[in-house]
Length: 276
Image (cartoon, rainbow, N blue to C red; front, side):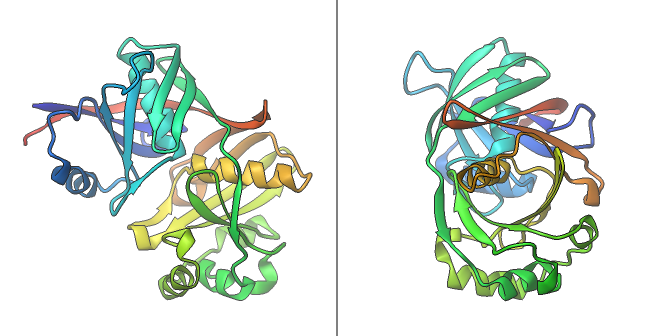
């Protein structure tokens, strides 16, 4: 039977960070089962591992949310690298993702990866609509929202205060309106943040993808870091996410060699098998 593990990612302690299911060898699973399995776990992402297509690489990685397959995501890449390190791979590894090969370095407790994907600016959603989606006053926005991607699209919005960030109350109807207006953004996922010196506090909401709130979103952090660098406002440090939902997450981010490096810890929580 096919084995699985679950990890809490971007945390050093179980029951913090962002849960991830890793199906350690998905080769025997029918294609028709993959989305159903991801929906059954109902985590923000589930990873299915396959032998690499290129022999020198470490593994082929497919990532599913509860509703769709996505080409790239941050906490699955970190969690997968740690899972592979615990299985005896690494520390250097190359993961074959939907966006192409990603280089990672991992130990049995933490990992980092660098994406050199080009930043795509996909649009500028109306501030009033984004404020509605986040459930804040438009006056709480510190700047114009930007829809951007390094492989996965998010609307990135800076807020004026930590209090405004903590007070977000997402409006699903506004998300539906935003998704219709900006189809390139898929589910109109919202990443709101406040910058306080060397720390960014953030929250991410994607209710149309069955993710009311995500505890840690490495792909959004990578897109934000690239966007800030393009504006001459480089941020390197730690992003605090998940605090407002009781799952504290710490995401390291650094700009280097023309790319964005994301780092964090991961903890093995459960192991089992799929009875399929």
